[in-house]
Amino acid sequence: MTLDASSLQMVKPERRLKRTDRSPLASIGLHAGLIVASLVAVFPVFWVLVTSFKPDARAVETTPQLFNESSLDNYTRILGGEKGAFLTWFGNSVLIALLTTVIAVFLSATTGYAASRFRFPGKRSLMMSFLVVQMFPFAVLIVPLYNILIALGLQGSSIGLVLVYCTTAVPFCTYMLKGYFDTIPTDIDEAGRVDGLSPFGVFWRLIMPLAKPGLAVTSFYAFLTAWGEVAFASAFLSAADESKTLAVGLQVFVQQNRTEWGHLAAASILVAIPAVIVFYLVQRFLVTGLSSGAVKG
Image (cartoon, rainbow, N blue to C red; front, side, top):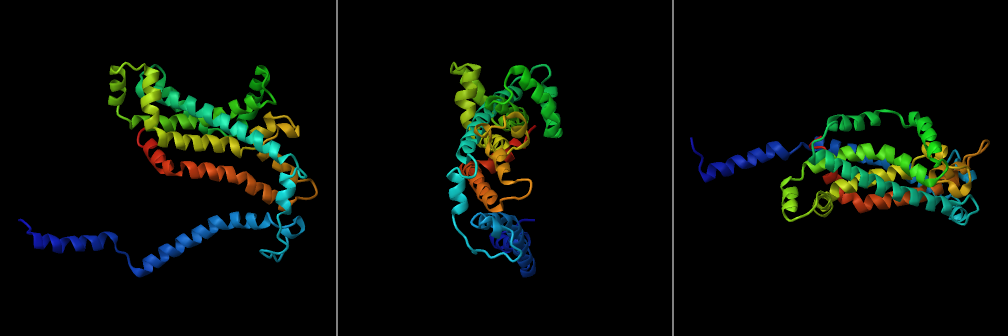
């Protein structure tokens, strides 16, 4: 049985109706659910922002007013150094986060590429070990890592903390990049070798530019691993103010008998800004990198 053009025109609209149209009630319910979910997600951040402009006495009032006695005093005191060495903590956090990102992504990229392109004994066990490592709570690793850093003479240093963060970031990033490299055709490698490139030249000049979405995802993960972490930074850095990171320095606002909620909220907003900037820079690669890295394992 054959269908002429007029018959096809009659069939296509029916199929479109069945696939895409939803009832008005279902549409209202869907949009209402999305609005509620958005409000639930945004409201805590909004309230922290509002609290950051209030004095400590007004931050926890039982009948809160959005703009009651609002000012920039909390921000000026924090940035001016009256409430801890915030700028020093900020510089330490930026340095540690950037070093962690560069080292972890480079190690993950080279390891993931090797696991994707080459066959060697223990390859399957290596990739499995990366998954197993992620199953352990990070708190369990504090004691053995502490002993290792003491043996290396890196306890209390920023470099030691960077290496600790790499131990947590590299396994996940390697597994993600290995899956992404699997989606890149091996013909590109062969063409590069025909042109006279070394194995590392093929990796650096051909594969890395094609892996920008995957690198963006892993860079974002490695940056966040080091930027907002507290337990390792508290255990492996010295107690001096000039060695603290932002996440550790915020504890100065939480005292035994009182909490400076206004200053803590203002500092939290300042801490979140770099993470938001990094997310904005890599957001267009995130969906592509996550979906491509999950195709093969």
